[in-house]
Image (cartoon, rainbow, N blue to C red):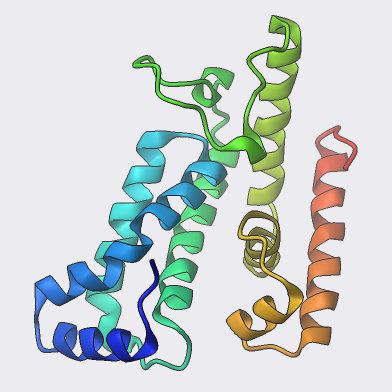
Length: 197
């Protein structure tokens, strides 16, 4: 459950004085949410866990640079998205085998439903779905970071235009036009990769 602005301010003050317990309390409500987003984007539990760890390490080391203009989670989430984007960009340069998209050997669940393969599908349909998932991730990684961020916030986090405007500190009209441009850019990338959006 998210913490209030007052609790956040108190915890931040303690963190800036070197209180590591306060930092653990500050990030605890967001750990699962950051992990779920990283897993959806990266499709790999190990990569998602590494992004979560790196996000919290960077957050800890850069906490003095956070001045509270936005909610702490907004700042934290932006760090996580940037790290996911970098990993996807590296992956785009180094093609991944399709097996990276399937459940782990220990039977762990695949990524959440936005980018998941239906087990009821035939092997051919599953293979086609895996290829589509891989191409969508590749297309996302080819976007400008600003386009990547607004699409993820809208499509994965399901934020309204008003919430996007608050989160990004932009007028609603600007949010709508950026989102439109980002969707066009994604469609262009998907077409380039042979997928119709």
